Image 1: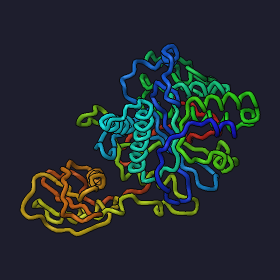
Image 2 (image 1 turned 45 degrees about the vertical axis):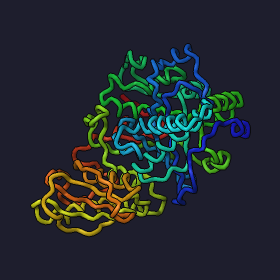
Image 3 (image 1 turned 180 degrees about the vertical axis):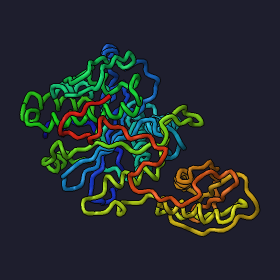
Image 4 (image 1 turned 90 degrees about the vertical axis):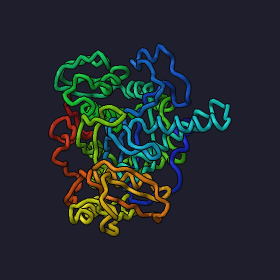
Length: 451
């Protein structure tokens, strides 16, 4: 363990003290990266073996999982965030969540180059940190959770780690043969590692539910990996442990200041049955976006309720979890002829966690719904727009006091006209079914057969 800790690559991506909420939230990221953890390019032959394809210059995060662990280390819940989820990226507007890292990195890279930084290594390190920080802020805003730790892994590392532990057991319901990912497996159980492991978790073509089935693939594979690592055979085998440590050093990046030895002590009582996998609720798996093509539509308020329901501290109700919207007071003005609409819209917003403000009629009739916000509160205004579920124009208004947002409802309003009464974790009527291998929850205590 000391050898592992001294050789880890770390990055300054978690800023400031995190709120003490009785639990640790870890963001796990799978990077579509052509470099190792130290930033060195991977050999072309290796990229060919990994079926990495031609790089488009973007470093997208194609796997995103938030792991919640109460401080007593008694259990862990891993919550998948589908890569095409259409969300608000702080500072960049609404886009697919897997582009948050790339957008943050590209913006910082441009800023550094424009400021005269000629050190390519320095530019790479600082821009990568900015990318991770943008991604973390995006996940925090979507889930309402405070991310305490960050870990990313690249294509090479995923392959190497699976080989180091002697492969992972998986099970398929049917034969698959996908030319895109290279996945070619027969129905039933398999022990896979290296390139085969990558092919298994990257397949989405030919699966009944595309990306959502790929999310399930990732979950059952990680459950199998956890089962393998938690078994006495892996951690008690000096050779396997040495190979595992070498693979982690080459390919994993952690946030600075993460006490890995302390974390291992905290987790020593964890067993496979106490590690569960879930997926955030989604509304539409084929949502047409204005500029990003087809995406997965999610309701941020519903996601936060779901996450809080999953991650409530033992003995504490989910409603006691942090509410990210409570700090925004929303005034609502009715610019239509429909009586009582301001009151109704205000109730919809308070039902989604915002603090209710003044309600009344606007001066004259308004065609387009507008959300006015003070300096520095554009993200809060976007959260209000997300909660409304209706097209709205965001407008800076420096006369509005901090912590407040004003909604002027226009005749184009198409959002809810009744207060939101959403039970934490309950799907909406048009929500796509949450992905699962079968009717049992996915845990690291057994093998779940999947599509």
